[in-house]
Amino acid sequence: MKRTLITLAMTLAVAAPAFADQALATAKNCMACHAVDKKLVGPSFKDVAGKYAGKAGAVDTLAGKIVKGGSGVWGPVPMPANAQVNDAEAKKLAEWVLTLK
Image (cartoon, rainbow, N blue to C red):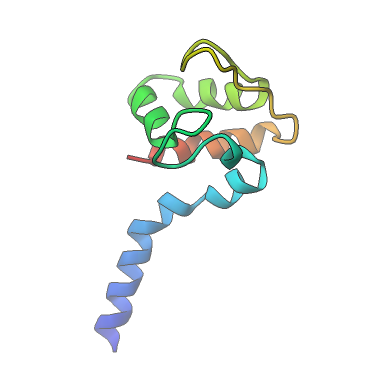
């Protein structure tokens, strides 16, 4: 029993980051245009993570794009500003996206 609980705890610890803020992304309508692992209207979150991996200031850059919107980075379809996301939520979402691989 103890071994099962330890295994379960380790599994959750490894899997938790992948779902840590997917609920927030869903609540803030990010998932209407993005998916974790496939392109919809916008790029997948994994593609975004790959593009910004290891870049200084990536969290702040992505958080700014979440709040203010952006265009030209992923093609002709612009990302609209998301007024329902505050700065703290945008930073949390950006940090989560950057954990995806």
